[in-house]
Length: 404
Image (cartoon, rainbow, N blue to C red; front, side):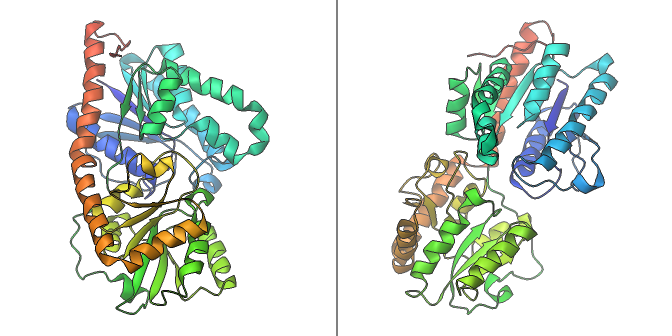
């Protein structure tokens, strides 16, 4: 089956959705002898993918860098992405694609392609776009029902929905999806051999006995770094040998948080450490005392959670659906998203090492049983097997049918 993957992001960069797209491509490569076609934004670095034909849309040089989430910069890239898709579909008109796998907002382009060319599509749903749009630009709130209607149209006309978590699967079903497959992310672990061991404490010039609360990820407001900072401020006097380390974030966000930390006088113990390579992630996680996920908004589960769980280091997370759909009180210490509650949860693990160890080991077992490459590949293949079967049952036409 000739598949086109539409990924409206810079590719490749070390960020959640592009990493998930890389996993998808790897799985599609392994299931088929036919090349997989990929269309992305202009930005990003080239990586080796043996059976992927990668096309990049044009973008003006000033718009090559695109951050996570909706933005004017992203909309500009989407415009050129749409033009590139039209050109690609025209080029392949004599041997047209048999399926489009559309990531995020590319589903709107896939829907139009289905209307005009009858190419079926799968919607890779990483968020509820209508909600994301309103959260970003509240001035558009009066148009919320319109955006929801447009999203429902694309969901109902998709041959299948790939949802990254339970809450999105439920949303897709409520909006009339024909077929829903939950395809959870997996840990960003690496078997890379290091010439010399990495020591986070040495890198940051911390005492060997330092207790580290580690956060890894971007620093967008919904990630809850302000909550973590307020919580740490409450416990810092009780735990003078404890440090909070923040890994990740754009240069602008790092600068803003360094200023805020300095204004609170916490710069020696609340450290904005900057970005680190993703393939070294597990080496850093394993050196932490506690892993923090203080997210305050959203329902989709952050990709980092799967790496957190696999590390065996205890996790303190907010008691929100974004976390509770993959973690429970047996695998993480869940706290209400308020400074008092989150601070108390951090203090509980710092004071009770045996409980912390028990929690981390339980999380590791849970992750190894449920969030692995083998499970990811199995679930994706199950969906694509259905799509292939539906295609064969219609005599090889481009109209796919899936079971309900």
